[in-house]
Image (cartoon, rainbow, N blue to C red; front, side, top):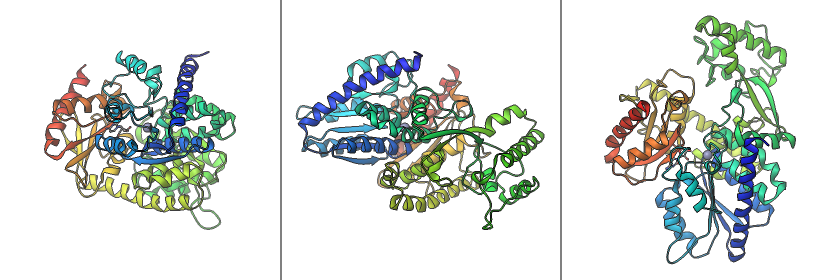
Amino acid sequence: MNKIHTKLKLLTSDLTETIKWFQDHLKESEASVQIYTHLDADGLTSGAILGKALYRERIPFQISVLRQLEREEILKIAEKVQDYNNLVIFSDFGSGQYLELDDKLNNDNKNTPYIILDHHFPQNISDKNDDKIKEIYQNSKPWHINPYFYEIDGSKEISGAGICYFFAKALNENNLDLSPIALIGATGDIQNQGPNNSFTGLNSVILEHATKADLVEMVNDLNFSPIKPINEAIAYSSDINLPGLSGNTSKMLKFLQTLGILMENTEGNIRTLNDFNQEEKQKVSSAIIRYISLKLDVEPSEIVKKLIINRYILKNELVGSELHDLKEFSYLLNSCGRSNNGSLGIAIAMGDRKIAYKNAKKQLIEYKKSLGQALSWIQKENKIQLKEHIQFFFGEEVISENIIGTIASMLIFSKNDIIEKSKPIFGCAKRKEEEVYKISGRAHESIVKKGVNLSEAIREALKLSNLDALGGGHPPAAGTKVPVDKIDVFLENCNKIIKKQLQE
Ligand code: C5P
Ligand code: ZN
């Protein structure tokens, strides 16, 4: 048995204990199970998996979507569940607040039974090799499940939805059919980062389940959106740069037309990658490789690594729809969560293909528009500010708290000339109803490899700035909130800590 299967065995055995504990508490509770989950694609799929699994067991439940499990939210939850003795599940967050949850949900008056199914670093831990993880693991059985307990990397090898999937499967083997939903969550958290966008660790085990059940198929394909007009898909690719053509759809169309491929379908619309046959795809890929290697003097083998990827197809979905492709599906869910339509996303992930899907597609258009506007505003107005070791920007009236993290991600993880990737970026969005900034930190893999750990940096900077807000996440992506009058101090402390991390 290889290492990952040994780890999975241990995880599954612990989950069996968790479920026993869950069922025992369920007997004592007459109220519905309260599921609290995060608003991004991983959080929504986590909620959907749990919802489906409980529905199948005829266990009544309610799902609430939160932008983050902040201390104030925990207090509200404590108050809400106190009277009804609800069982609570926290998914895709909760580990980073586990001490806080214990403090607020367990006290002299009341012990609220709850389960944490998460993949973020536990509170006060920011290093996967920290010995204290073992202690937390031992002390939080059976109600806390986290991949780091099993030496599984929660930032790459399994998502919140993945943990919820294994929980669901331990509850009932039939829940194996929820495996594709777990992969959508992992894709939303950009975890398919193995060679050619493959899944690694426990995510690859989930993929195996989904493939064997004939629900998902992996195909080699060009790394462009399969459903956008092809010139647009290539021009706005977040990974492939064709100097002189990228960003310009009409030039891109001309370039493609020289390849002798029919560009329009019978209705006069520009065809999509989905419409292309193998031979046409081959022509496009050869032309792109030739173009980039000439313009940028890059080895063709290096171009191929980015150009040809594993595409994951949901076999039961309509070809050409957002839902046919894991990446597009996760994008749709993310857009729901980030435009305060989390319930639409959960409904779609649970199977709705009618009203919720229709409404989600409508708001997707608005969402894309707001992201595009935000990025060009940052660029045109030179909104990026630099310190020696970090860069940062304020969302002002243009970028709201809900999308500040997405914008920071796009700046760091997508191909663009707007910012340097050698410094982490901190996006700051003023919250409307509170005198605080929501902070989203993002760091490129190249500097994470050199020692940058944003989860740790944010927690240390909070401490150094005498702030007691909760914060953290993963090495390449972490967040928190900071009072308006402390923002300068906080950012300066981030700068110092990143400097230290790079020196060490
Ligand atoms: O909010 P944002 O998207 O910037 O968060 C980046 C990552 O950090 C997410 O995975 C989020 O769940 C995590 N995070 C956290 N605790 C916080 C804020 C963010 O674990 N207080
Ligand atoms: Zn997640």
